[in-house]
Image (cartoon, rainbow, N blue to C red; front, side, top):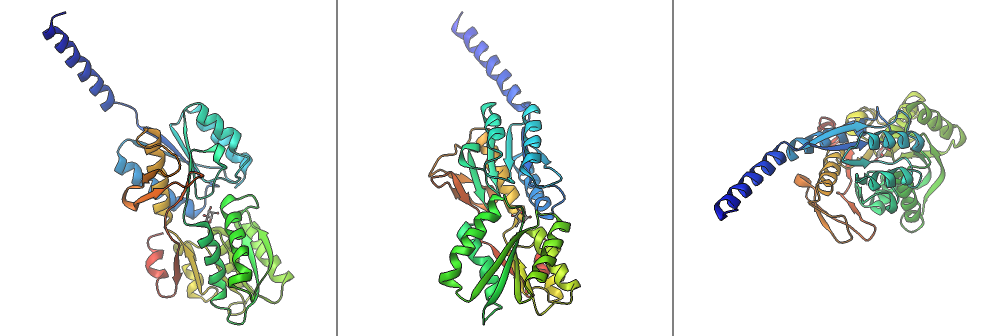
Length: 331
Ligand code: RAM
C-alpha cells in the first residue's frame, strides 16, 4: 500500500471511530436509594439529574425498594445487573448484606459506589459520606444540649437498625457524650425504619416509657418529622424538644410551631449530584478509586479518598427560626 493510500485508510478509520464515539450510548447510572417515597432521596435525585445534564452523556435510573430493607435492595441490584447498567450508586440499608450482590455487579464490569449510607469496602469501589461521621455524631447531640442548660434525659429515634449511616452517627454521638456533654443522659435508642407509621409508634413509645424525656434526637429526615408531629399532637411543645437531621421543606412547620428549636442537614441535592459525578468519572475511567486519590465533584468541589476509599462532602448546616424559611424553598 502506498503511503498516500495508508494515510487515507487511517483517516477513514479515525473518522469512523469518531462517529462511533459521538453516537456511543449514554452512561447508565442507577441511583439506588434506601426506600422510595422519602423526600431526602427525591432531593438527591434532583441533584443527580442536574449532574446528568451537566455531564451530557448520562441517563439516571432512580430506583429503590418500597421498604428500607437490605433484602429488597438486593432484588433491585440484581435487576440492575440484568439490565446491564454501567454504574450503581447506592445508599445501603446494610453494610454487609449487600456485598455479594454488589460484588457480582463489579465482576460484570459495573462501577459500584455507595453514598449517604455505606457498603463495606469489599462491596464497592468508594463511599461518599455526606459529612465527617464524628462531626455529625457530635452535632446531633449538641443540637439537643444547646437547649438543655441543666442537662437531662434524651432518646434517639433512628432509621432502620442496620442502616450504616445512622449507626455510625449514633456510635460517634455516644462517644462524644461523656467528655463533651456529661449532663446529657441517653436513655434509649429505638428504630422507626424510615417508615412514618413505625416512627410515629416508636416516638409515642418513648414518651410513654420516659416521662422525663427532654429531647428526642432523630438522625433521619423521616423519623424527625414523625417525632415532631407526635410531640405536637400530644401537647408536649415546650416540654420535649425534637431535633436531629431534617429536610427544611418538610420540617419548617415544626420550627414554626416550637416543637423543635433547631435541626441540621447537608445539602441533599449536592449529595446526589456528587454521587453521580463520581460514579460517572469512575465508569468512564476518567478517575480511579484508590487511597489518596483526589476526585472532582463538579461544581461542589473535590474530595480526597482515605485509606478505606471513603470521602466526605461538606459540613452539616444548622436550621432554626432565622433561616429555615429560606432553605425550605430549596430542599
Ligand atoms: C433519611 C435517610 C438518609 C439519611 C437522612 C438524614 O432520609 O435515612 O439515609 O441520610 O435521613
